[in-house]
Length: 277
Ligand code: MG
View 1: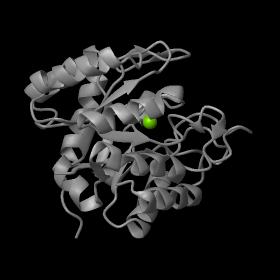
View 2: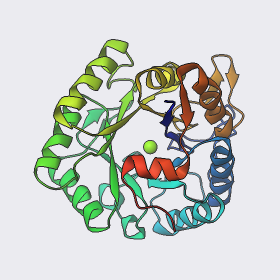
View 3: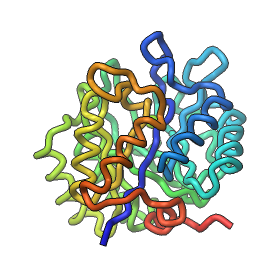
View 4: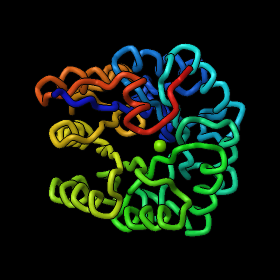
């Protein structure tokens, strides 16, 4: 039977909008509009970073609230996921918006080098974020930027800080972190079955690796993540016109791999999230 694929769209990220990235949505209105287009194209999950009025990475809960409200209104059932990522914001503010109870929030389970500097996630900080998510009924998306983070996630499950059958994202191709190599991808898939039985997973390929990793996921039963946060190009020599265009590229390839885009209701069921009433 054709297997559904949850398509995540990471609409914004923390990279500054420049001449070569005009399509990145940064105001809440732009973000809601871009999410709606991606939703119409077949995305069922949106990963959200917010931006301050000067377009720098933001952490204001009001901004998250505005985007969440717009997405809930215009994209019925779509899964809302807030980023608790570190680029451009202080550690103490990274979970400040979780009281808004999005469906999901990202949770990196260890530290790693990024292109410039360290993405710092000390054990007590990770546990604190996990606990806040648990208390607010938020499902984490475990972000695995490097190998140890997979096993750290399994430890969080053992400690009762993350529920069983978590959703895990393998982030591949960030310079200085885990490379986008097929051998690594296959190893991660085998390991997750062993250390986190029943977990669902998605992989993200960063920059030029996005499409390649999307295809690996379609082929091997994983879910897919795309969007301008990870990559600005639809082909090596052409910028993507929008987040929706990147989503459409996956949707168009689905049949070739005997997959189909999951509806929001299916995506919720696959991830064990409450249905939307
Ligand atoms: Mg992110």
